[in-house]
Length: 194
Image: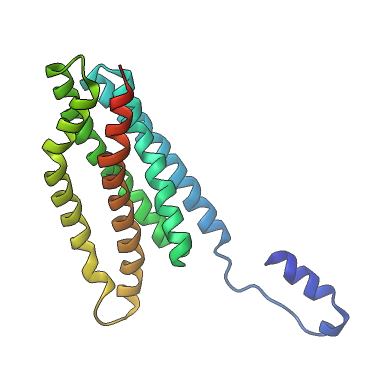
C-alpha cells in the first residue's frame, strides 16, 4: 500500500492532491505476529520440557511437540480458504489456542504410552487401543470447548459480536485441528515407533 501511495503521489494526474495516511495497522499486525511466534516457541519449549519430565520418552515428546505447528498450519489454511483475514483478533485467538492445542495430543500420547507398557512388542495394537480408550473423551472435550465459542457467530451482529466471532472461528478451528491430529497423526506416528 505504501508503494502504491508513493506511485500515486508521483503521478502527474494527481498533482495538487495530497494523500494522508490516517491509520496504519501494519506495525500492530507485525508486532502481533512476532508475539504469536514468540508465544508459540515458548509454548513448544515448555511443552517439550514438561512432557519429557513426565514421559521420559523423546519420541513421544516430539510427537506432541509436532502437533503445535501442524495445527497452526491447518488453522491458517482454513482461514485462508474461508476468507478470514489474519488480524489482531484472529492472532489473539491463535495465542489463546496455543495452550489448548497440546491437550488432545498429550492425552492420546499418554494413553498410547500406557498401552505400550502392556503390549511392548506390538506398537500398532497399543496405538489403536490407546487411541480408542480416549477417543470419546477427546471428542466430547473438544466439542465442548468449541460449543462455548459458537454463540458468538450467531445472533445480532454488532461491534462486539463481530470481534468475538473472529476469535471464536480461530479457536474452534484450531481445536478441531488438534483433535484431528490427536486421533490420526499421533497414533500413526506412535505405531511406527519401535
